Image 1 (cartoon, one colour):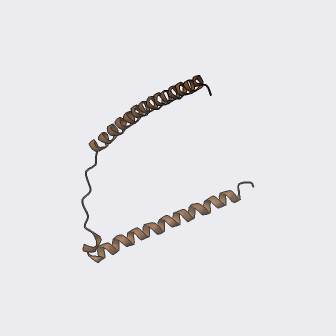
Image 2 (spheres, rainbow, N blue to C red; image 1 turned 180 degrees about the vertical axis):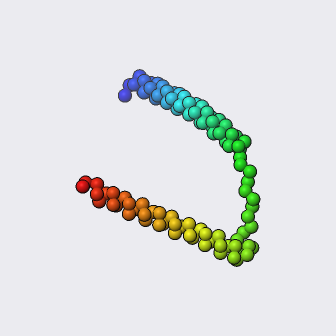
Image 3 (cartoon, one colour; image 1 turned 90 degrees about the vertical axis):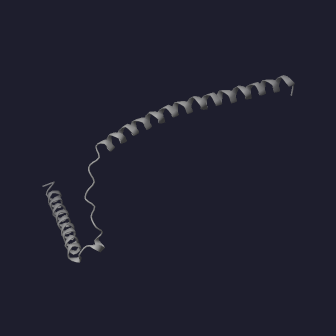
Length: 105
């Protein structure tokens, strides 16, 4: 190959490398600005959340140091609520199936 073809190929290689680097740097700076703006907005929201923080609840003692009757009562209340929730769910299920059964009548 003649030397002038090699010169053209080297110049083309250098030009494409410079163009690629310019493209990458341009997009990296754009992404950096976007990330900085997003971080600023997140910091603003977080500072507002910290400013409106609710007072913390009274710390409760762990269940293993409380009397067993108190712990058992809380467990029974929670279990009763679970059973009520399951009954409500079952009732809704029955109503929906009744409605679907008579939908095309």
